[in-house]
Image (cartoon, rainbow, N blue to C red; front, side, top):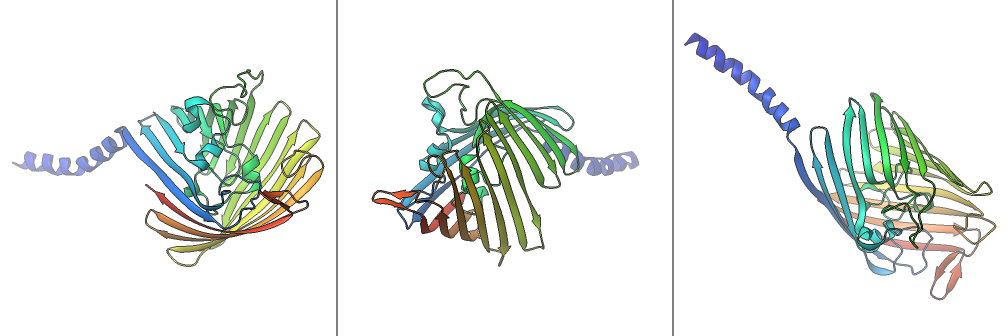
Length: 332
């Protein structure tokens, strides 16, 4: 009887540990995603991606299928709708609904290989509206890369210190390393990242293209956060674009936050703001964000001022614009 009691006591101590180990090792399949829709007050639009349509407009439906094993897994991220179409603009055929499609394998402790199509490692903002504080996007995000297809290695070097190296197709040509007419490119892109305590220095380089990007931020107190993004891209040695943006955000309550994006963007012959020459743009975007569970409601006021009349609508152009946007986002 005594041995039986000792066995039962030992088993009661061991079972939680065995269950925890079993739960960690058990492969899991997950389905997540989001939907978003918005209203934009102005027909004039900045030259940035997403949230550009007038009146009541659609964002996108996003479905993410993932499978996570002990050392390997996959992600299939599908997008539908205007925002999704802009995100995968260089994909053709059935690939034009694929935002991400990759497999990963843990090669050893702290080393993971990712093979396939994955969203970019550069910049502060991302494609999905669920991960951005502002609903509209910056010039730096819009004209940097969206996605890459290739092979990357991620290294966890120490607590809060990481590195990444990768070789990839030409930027945003995600289904194959070829242009829209089917002609194969004869070169690839190289990417690298160093992360130290939440601050990331990024490099993307290839033939006639080099981009250096810094992305980071700081918690100034429990309710106030300051995000930072700065980038410079050189095209064929003579032309370039660069920018810097600050993202101060403050929690006013458990459900409501207020954030500002102040961005300065400079185009030197890259043809982003206008054809030829040197142009600059200043954008101020004030966003209020109300959250209730999986539902988020954003109210946004954006003012853009340019050095030339490069904001267009159906009746003409202007060198400044303002717009009010409200957006509803639901994630699951």
